[in-house]
Image 1 (cartoon, one colour):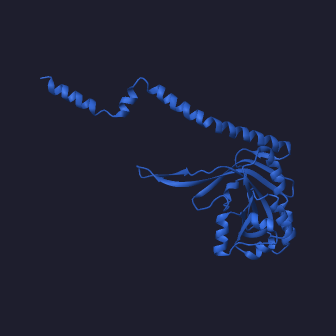
Image 2 (tube, rainbow, N blue to C red; image 1 turned 90 degrees about the vertical axis):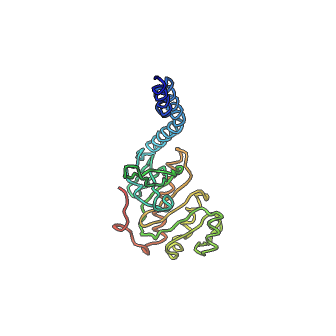
Image 3 (cartoon, rainbow, N blue to C red; image 1 turned 135 degrees about the horizontal axis):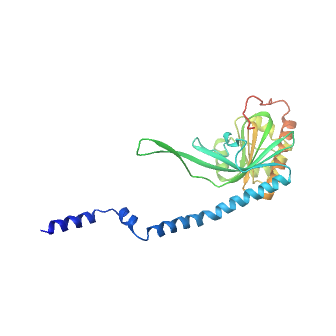
Length: 266
Protein backbone atom coordinates (compact mmCIF):
# COMPACT_ATOMS: atom_id res chain seq x y z
CA UNK A 1 0.00 0.00 0.00
CA UNK A 2 2.93 2.32 0.63
CA UNK A 3 4.60 1.65 -2.74
CA UNK A 4 2.65 4.21 -4.81
CA UNK A 5 3.22 6.84 -2.15
CA UNK A 6 6.94 6.09 -2.09
CA UNK A 7 7.18 6.17 -5.88
CA UNK A 8 5.33 9.48 -5.98
CA UNK A 9 7.69 10.94 -3.39
CA UNK A 10 10.77 9.84 -5.33
CA UNK A 11 9.36 11.25 -8.58
CA UNK A 12 8.71 14.57 -6.87
CA UNK A 13 12.27 14.67 -5.56
CA UNK A 14 13.64 13.96 -9.02
CA UNK A 15 11.65 16.85 -10.44
CA UNK A 16 13.19 19.41 -8.05
CA UNK A 17 15.30 21.91 -9.95
CA UNK A 18 18.95 22.56 -9.34
CA UNK A 19 18.01 26.08 -8.30
CA UNK A 20 15.83 24.72 -5.47
CA UNK A 21 18.62 22.45 -4.26
CA UNK A 22 21.23 25.22 -4.33
CA UNK A 23 18.93 27.74 -2.66
CA UNK A 24 18.33 25.38 0.28
CA UNK A 25 21.93 24.25 0.71
CA UNK A 26 23.79 25.41 3.81
CA UNK A 27 26.77 26.57 1.77
CA UNK A 28 24.79 28.82 -0.62
CA UNK A 29 25.33 32.10 1.33
CA UNK A 30 29.06 31.41 1.49
CA UNK A 31 29.14 30.76 -2.28
CA UNK A 32 27.38 34.06 -2.99
CA UNK A 33 29.72 35.88 -0.64
CA UNK A 34 32.69 34.37 -2.44
CA UNK A 35 31.37 35.44 -5.87
CA UNK A 36 30.75 39.00 -4.67
CA UNK A 37 34.20 39.13 -3.06
CA UNK A 38 35.96 37.93 -6.20
CA UNK A 39 34.05 40.42 -8.36
CA UNK A 40 34.87 43.22 -5.94
CA UNK A 41 38.57 42.35 -5.85
CA UNK A 42 38.62 42.20 -9.65
CA UNK A 43 37.05 45.67 -9.95
CA UNK A 44 38.98 47.27 -7.08
CA UNK A 45 42.26 48.01 -8.97
CA UNK A 46 40.33 49.70 -11.78
CA UNK A 47 38.29 51.75 -9.31
CA UNK A 48 41.35 52.79 -7.32
CA UNK A 49 43.21 53.70 -10.50
CA UNK A 50 40.26 55.78 -11.76
CA UNK A 51 39.78 57.59 -8.48
CA UNK A 52 43.52 58.16 -8.17
CA UNK A 53 43.70 59.52 -11.71
CA UNK A 54 40.80 61.91 -11.10
CA UNK A 55 42.43 63.25 -7.94
CA UNK A 56 45.79 63.76 -9.64
CA UNK A 57 44.30 65.51 -12.66
CA UNK A 58 42.16 67.70 -10.42
CA UNK A 59 45.18 68.68 -8.34
CA UNK A 60 47.24 69.56 -11.43
CA UNK A 61 44.35 71.54 -12.94
CA UNK A 62 43.69 73.60 -9.80
CA UNK A 63 47.42 74.28 -9.39
CA UNK A 64 47.46 75.70 -12.94
CA UNK A 65 44.40 77.86 -12.29
CA UNK A 66 42.01 75.73 -14.36
CA UNK A 67 38.59 74.27 -13.54
CA UNK A 68 38.11 70.54 -12.97
CA UNK A 69 34.99 68.37 -13.13
CA UNK A 70 35.09 64.61 -12.76
CA UNK A 71 31.97 64.25 -14.92
CA UNK A 72 30.97 65.81 -18.25
CA UNK A 73 29.53 69.06 -16.93
CA UNK A 74 30.04 71.03 -20.21
CA UNK A 75 28.11 68.41 -22.23
CA UNK A 76 31.06 67.57 -24.47
CA UNK A 77 29.65 64.20 -25.55
CA UNK A 78 26.89 65.95 -27.51
CA UNK A 79 29.51 66.49 -30.21
CA UNK A 80 29.69 63.54 -32.62
CA UNK A 81 33.25 63.43 -33.87
CA UNK A 82 34.34 60.72 -36.29
CA UNK A 83 37.47 60.11 -34.25
CA UNK A 84 35.27 59.04 -31.32
CA UNK A 85 32.11 57.65 -32.98
CA UNK A 86 32.96 55.54 -36.05
CA UNK A 87 29.34 54.51 -36.71
CA UNK A 88 25.74 55.46 -35.87
CA UNK A 89 25.45 53.09 -32.92
CA UNK A 90 28.56 54.41 -31.23
CA UNK A 91 28.52 56.94 -28.41
CA UNK A 92 31.19 58.40 -26.19
CA UNK A 93 31.49 59.77 -22.69
CA UNK A 94 33.86 62.29 -21.16
CA UNK A 95 35.32 62.30 -17.65
CA UNK A 96 38.03 64.14 -15.72
CA UNK A 97 37.29 67.37 -17.60
CA UNK A 98 39.83 70.18 -17.27
CA UNK A 99 38.67 73.59 -18.57
CA UNK A 100 41.43 76.06 -19.36
CA UNK A 101 39.89 79.46 -20.13
CA UNK A 102 42.08 82.56 -20.29
CA UNK A 103 39.28 84.81 -21.54
CA UNK A 104 40.21 84.56 -25.22
CA UNK A 105 40.60 80.81 -25.77
CA UNK A 106 38.74 78.04 -23.93
CA UNK A 107 40.08 74.48 -24.08
CA UNK A 108 38.42 71.40 -22.60
CA UNK A 109 40.77 68.47 -21.96
CA UNK A 110 39.21 65.17 -20.90
CA UNK A 111 39.35 61.39 -20.89
CA UNK A 112 37.15 60.00 -23.69
CA UNK A 113 35.73 56.49 -23.83
CA UNK A 114 33.78 55.15 -26.80
CA UNK A 115 31.06 52.50 -26.50
CA UNK A 116 28.38 50.92 -28.69
CA UNK A 117 24.67 50.84 -27.87
CA UNK A 118 22.53 47.80 -28.68
CA UNK A 119 18.78 47.41 -28.32
CA UNK A 120 17.88 44.15 -26.56
CA UNK A 121 14.38 42.64 -26.71
CA UNK A 122 13.00 41.32 -23.42
CA UNK A 123 10.49 38.51 -22.90
CA UNK A 124 7.81 40.96 -21.76
CA UNK A 125 7.83 42.61 -25.17
CA UNK A 126 9.79 45.61 -23.98
CA UNK A 127 13.27 46.55 -25.10
CA UNK A 128 16.19 48.20 -23.40
CA UNK A 129 19.47 49.72 -24.49
CA UNK A 130 22.68 48.12 -23.29
CA UNK A 131 26.26 49.24 -23.75
CA UNK A 132 28.69 46.81 -25.33
CA UNK A 133 32.12 46.96 -26.83
CA UNK A 134 33.33 49.72 -24.53
CA UNK A 135 36.74 50.83 -25.74
CA UNK A 136 39.77 51.95 -23.81
CA UNK A 137 40.08 55.55 -22.65
CA UNK A 138 42.14 58.12 -24.48
CA UNK A 139 42.97 61.75 -23.85
CA UNK A 140 41.25 64.40 -25.94
CA UNK A 141 40.94 68.17 -26.17
CA UNK A 142 38.19 70.31 -27.66
CA UNK A 143 38.71 73.96 -28.63
CA UNK A 144 36.58 76.57 -30.39
CA UNK A 145 37.78 77.80 -33.80
CA UNK A 146 37.07 81.22 -35.37
CA UNK A 147 36.10 79.56 -38.68
CA UNK A 148 33.49 77.24 -40.17
CA UNK A 149 35.57 74.24 -41.25
CA UNK A 150 34.44 71.37 -43.50
CA UNK A 151 35.03 68.08 -41.70
CA UNK A 152 38.74 67.29 -42.03
CA UNK A 153 40.53 64.36 -40.41
CA UNK A 154 44.28 64.28 -39.88
CA UNK A 155 45.11 60.88 -38.43
CA UNK A 156 48.05 58.55 -37.95
CA UNK A 157 49.54 57.09 -41.11
CA UNK A 158 49.41 53.29 -41.21
CA UNK A 159 49.24 50.44 -43.70
CA UNK A 160 45.44 50.62 -44.00
CA UNK A 161 45.45 54.36 -44.66
CA UNK A 162 48.23 53.96 -47.22
CA UNK A 163 46.24 51.31 -49.09
CA UNK A 164 43.11 53.50 -48.87
CA UNK A 165 44.99 56.50 -50.23
CA UNK A 166 46.44 54.45 -53.06
CA UNK A 167 43.04 53.03 -54.02
CA UNK A 168 41.01 56.24 -53.72
CA UNK A 169 43.61 58.98 -54.24
CA UNK A 170 41.80 60.95 -51.54
CA UNK A 171 44.82 61.51 -49.32
CA UNK A 172 46.54 64.88 -49.41
CA UNK A 173 50.30 65.39 -49.55
CA UNK A 174 52.05 68.59 -48.49
CA UNK A 175 55.60 69.86 -48.78
CA UNK A 176 56.62 68.47 -45.37
CA UNK A 177 58.03 64.94 -45.67
CA UNK A 178 57.72 64.49 -41.90
CA UNK A 179 54.03 65.33 -42.07
CA UNK A 180 53.42 63.10 -45.10
CA UNK A 181 55.05 60.09 -43.45
CA UNK A 182 53.30 60.62 -40.11
CA UNK A 183 49.76 61.65 -41.04
CA UNK A 184 46.90 60.76 -43.33
CA UNK A 185 44.50 63.54 -44.43
CA UNK A 186 40.88 63.13 -45.49
CA UNK A 187 38.66 66.19 -46.00
CA UNK A 188 35.20 66.98 -47.31
CA UNK A 189 36.78 69.97 -49.06
CA UNK A 190 40.28 69.45 -50.46
CA UNK A 191 40.67 73.18 -51.11
CA UNK A 192 40.08 73.85 -47.43
CA UNK A 193 42.59 71.17 -46.43
CA UNK A 194 45.24 72.58 -48.73
CA UNK A 195 44.66 76.11 -47.44
CA UNK A 196 44.73 74.88 -43.83
CA UNK A 197 47.94 72.88 -44.12
CA UNK A 198 50.26 75.84 -44.32
CA UNK A 199 53.69 75.71 -42.69
CA UNK A 200 52.56 77.23 -39.37
CA UNK A 201 49.73 74.72 -38.90
CA UNK A 202 51.95 71.84 -39.97
CA UNK A 203 54.61 72.91 -37.48
CA UNK A 204 52.00 72.74 -34.70
CA UNK A 205 50.69 69.35 -35.80
CA UNK A 206 54.07 67.65 -36.08
CA UNK A 207 54.85 68.66 -32.50
CA UNK A 208 52.54 65.75 -31.64
CA UNK A 209 55.24 63.42 -33.01
CA UNK A 210 52.68 61.31 -34.84
CA UNK A 211 50.89 60.36 -31.61
CA UNK A 212 47.93 62.72 -31.97
CA UNK A 213 44.96 62.84 -34.34
CA UNK A 214 43.02 65.94 -35.36
CA UNK A 215 39.46 66.55 -36.52
CA UNK A 216 38.30 69.95 -37.77
CA UNK A 217 34.53 70.29 -37.97
CA UNK A 218 32.55 73.52 -38.02
CA UNK A 219 33.78 75.80 -35.28
CA UNK A 220 35.48 72.99 -33.40
CA UNK A 221 38.78 71.16 -33.32
CA UNK A 222 39.16 67.83 -31.57
CA UNK A 223 42.65 66.55 -30.77
CA UNK A 224 43.07 63.00 -29.47
CA UNK A 225 46.10 61.24 -28.01
CA UNK A 226 46.93 58.05 -26.11
CA UNK A 227 45.82 58.32 -22.49
CA UNK A 228 48.17 60.87 -20.94
CA UNK A 229 49.63 60.78 -17.46
CA UNK A 230 47.83 63.23 -15.14
CA UNK A 231 50.77 65.63 -14.92
CA UNK A 232 50.77 66.03 -18.73
CA UNK A 233 47.13 67.09 -19.05
CA UNK A 234 47.78 70.79 -18.35
CA UNK A 235 50.55 70.84 -20.95
CA UNK A 236 48.19 69.22 -23.45
CA UNK A 237 45.72 72.07 -22.89
CA UNK A 238 48.50 74.60 -23.43
CA UNK A 239 49.45 72.92 -26.70
CA UNK A 240 45.90 72.86 -28.12
CA UNK A 241 45.16 76.49 -27.17
CA UNK A 242 47.61 77.67 -29.88
CA UNK A 243 45.49 76.31 -32.74
CA UNK A 244 42.70 78.95 -32.93
CA UNK A 245 45.14 81.84 -33.36
CA UNK A 246 47.34 80.04 -35.87
CA UNK A 247 44.35 78.78 -37.90
CA UNK A 248 42.84 82.27 -37.98
CA UNK A 249 46.16 83.75 -39.14
CA UNK A 250 46.51 81.15 -41.90
CA UNK A 251 42.95 81.19 -43.26
CA UNK A 252 42.00 84.80 -42.56
CA UNK A 253 38.39 85.46 -43.59
CA UNK A 254 38.21 82.79 -46.30
CA UNK A 255 36.08 80.54 -44.07
CA UNK A 256 33.77 82.80 -42.03
CA UNK A 257 33.19 82.40 -38.32
CA UNK A 258 30.73 79.60 -37.61
CA UNK A 259 28.94 81.44 -34.79
CA UNK A 260 25.27 80.48 -34.94
CA UNK A 261 25.96 77.60 -37.33
CA UNK A 262 27.65 74.99 -35.18
CA UNK A 263 26.69 74.26 -31.58
CA UNK A 264 29.30 74.59 -28.87
CA UNK A 265 28.92 73.36 -25.28
CA UNK A 266 28.84 76.03 -22.61
